[in-house]
Image (cartoon, rainbow, N blue to C red; front, side, top):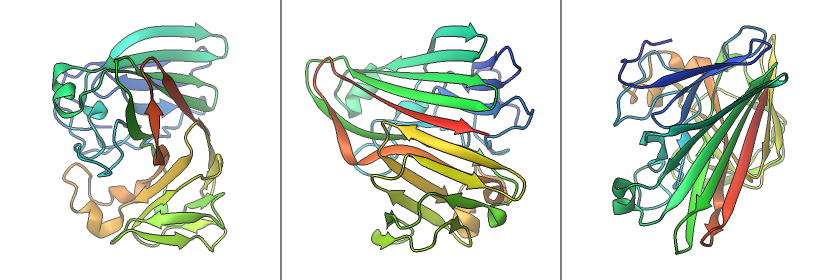
Length: 276
């Protein structure tokens, strides 16, 4: 794992059973999760930037209030570059929870004129990690948003990795001009760049490797994004080491196809659970 500059605040949390995770205030960004088997399950690029004005490459970035380029904001919005506050921690016999929060600022309102409170609750215990994102409209006007948990799952070799649970599902292929397609194969294998948005996707998927598997379940997030940049696209990212693409697949809990609309005082929540 890269050694970040000390100016970025990093927190570590350990459950009674030894499961642990790390979070940066910058972006409310989870960069490490090690369940009780002692194996790191999130990918973090060795070339990741650890600075106030860059998103961290890897882990579980929070995408809000815009997914990708689906609007006029900077790609993937601004939450992943904001400074989040540790609001609460709780430890029980079953695990440890840390809650981080961020709210609108003068800078955010200059490009998105809405008041909000974003909260990310992270819970780890045994072989499970749960990420629960809650957005509250704390202003006097309604707003809409899209977003995701852009989770980078560590794999031993992308060439030997399968995603199950999406067979027969329609998706938007965004490699090249966006094109509607149907996944005819039962399992998704990787032989080149993959960038797919599955709308109204199944709530339970699995990432299969030769000697292990991970289940990914969602609640409140209707869509799923599967992404791996492969060789040529990876070369465009200065913060991704050569051959880094071979060691991760992004399985993203998302809300894209139908933006969330919140009236003043309303809130929305979505959860992604990983079980190793």
